Length: 281
Image (cartoon, rainbow, N blue to C red; front, top):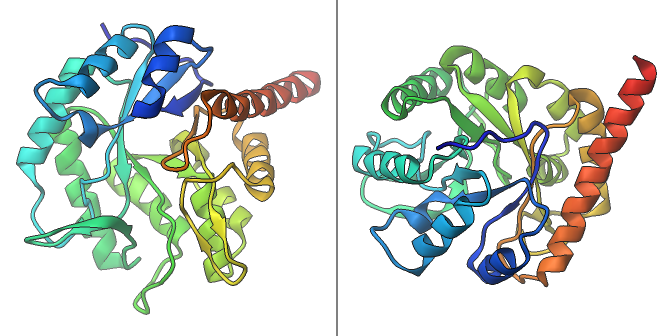
């Protein structure tokens, strides 16, 4: 039976390094987000632990291989496997990235940005509708961090995201760290990005760390969440109200207690927003 995710709720990315602490400690986490591709298998250790954890917690599926903006046809074999996993673990929702990472023959191990043009908008919206029809549920798409921009752009990234939600019915996974990284790399105001998005379409937030090299910033997901990202997150909550928030870490894994401390901080910031709103009501 599918478990309902509290809104707001505060979750962690499920990584194999933390299987044992989760099962042994039953931590105060509202939900876990899995990388879908890690569990699109018939059996084995990863799926065993996932099913054990999913018995106790709601699960969200987050993919990295959909390549919704790619030049190739949609990979319906991949979508069949994705749907099969969803039937098995009953995720609260399914998300992926607004990017491309596959050509006709090769899978690229990166999340590559798109040209933000009218042609691209209608092309991707049509593919999103196909995916949603196949899965039987809305698709949630995440903004990626970027380091180059297309000279053909006709939209800002935030205007493109807004238009895509209107054309396709998809929802948004707003990665606050990715906004900060891209803003530093391209010289735009991160708050203009966030404040321009349709608030009612933002289903989830991501928080993660990055590597700051001064002239540019790399989205590495292997560092603690930085102070500027925390500040941007707090401002985002003040606009949106508390939204389901996930803490991500993909390398240089710290003790589980360190991630829990970040989750507790996110929860405290959300609670502060709720308290301020109740005083103003």
